[in-house]
Image (cartoon, one colour):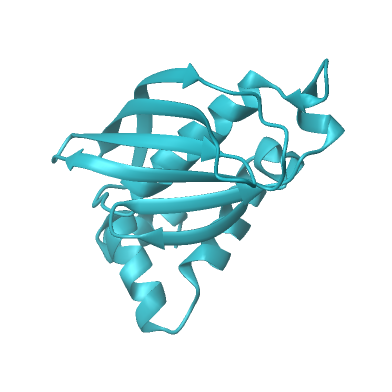
Length: 158
């Protein structure tokens, strides 16, 4: 059975995650393994899926030279990647479809990411049948808000 067939039979990501929990599996661990196998960048950044709930997600990641820019701070592209992932995972937790894509992601960079580890959190604001709107943020070790995003995701149902 292909991954898409498995998603269809489970009722999309939302059903797949519920099934994992019913089997005693950790959605966070299984999702992290899947994302690392799908994306070299997810592995390179050493993202760790900490929590996935109903319309909520949390990631953490450390500083490394691989994600840095000049000046010893995290590159804005990596911050964008973290925000897109955490917002997308929050949306995924409500998605009854087989996939989703980011339609729009607006980001405000507020402070440089210096003190690790970093935490990214995503929250669904409105989930519809076809689109979902979520906000995401990245904070440093001290809880300082460093970046904030608002995004829209499109659900792929078939």
